[in-house]
Image 1 (cartoon, rainbow, N blue to C red):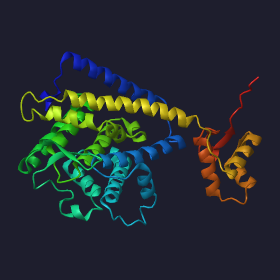
Image 2 (cartoon, helix red, strand yellow; image 1 turned 90 degrees about the vertical axis):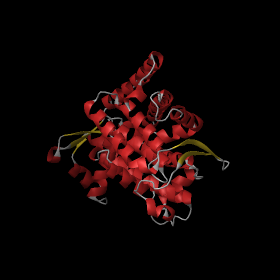
Image 3 (cartoon, helix red, strand yellow; image 1 turned 135 degrees about the vertical axis):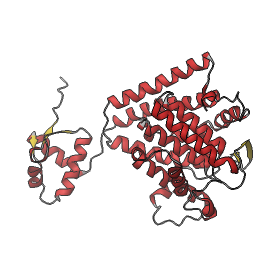
Image 4 (cartoon, rainbow, N blue to C red; image 1 turned 180 degrees about the horizontal axis):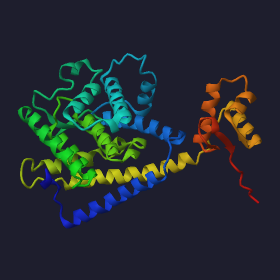
Length: 357
């Protein structure tokens, strides 16, 4: 695998420049020490819908983002009759597993099989090969909106799939432990190789993008959950396939290189950081939306200057303690009030208004 990451001087300098931009954003994002407030929750909600819609459309599904949003809102009561609906539901459930558990899971054959099983769980057509390596030859095919297809490249023979996946996973995990190659470059190489092997009968493209999110979050790039990487790839679908084809033309040869794929991947990540920066600035500057009860609680705290939870409960006897605690927590998250102390010593303070004069 290492020889595929040998770059010319010019390409190497360009790669280092892009990695510097991404890592600088990562550092700045962490330095902000952002708690997941309503702005970030809204961004993650939008990113989830865009990721699911884009990743399934890349593979030929037809649901737009509004249809994806509507389906997710009624997922528990909707009978998934179409292939597109089944793919959306599977992608959503697999993505939630990653977002909720990425820091507790290692990259392994068992975990990848589990994700593949979740991804295809709603499709009866895929019942026999969920979570199992392919038994028949397959190929990478580009699906276009007009229904046409184009073969991008042939993939690993089914007989060799298990062996090549085992070697890939050993290489990736060793690189992450030794830290001798930048983790984003390791992720780039993994995704390229995974798509080249195409280990499953179906769902490889979608699974590769889920694993991209998993590996980036695992390596500390948690901001990717707030903006859709898949959406950026969908907008550059032709470039995506061309980058894969350029590496694949010398598959299994010593001169197999993935320069084009790495540059494409990094460029998408740089675009992602710029979009997230702009989106977060817009959302964080929006005035928080308060319901009437929350407005009254905020006004009470402003009048009292400093209060304890017991005082708020006495002021609003018609509301439950749990409801008031949620309201106060929301006001703290949105930085409309300040919190000091812990447990019985907790106090809530009105923020000082800045005198415009």
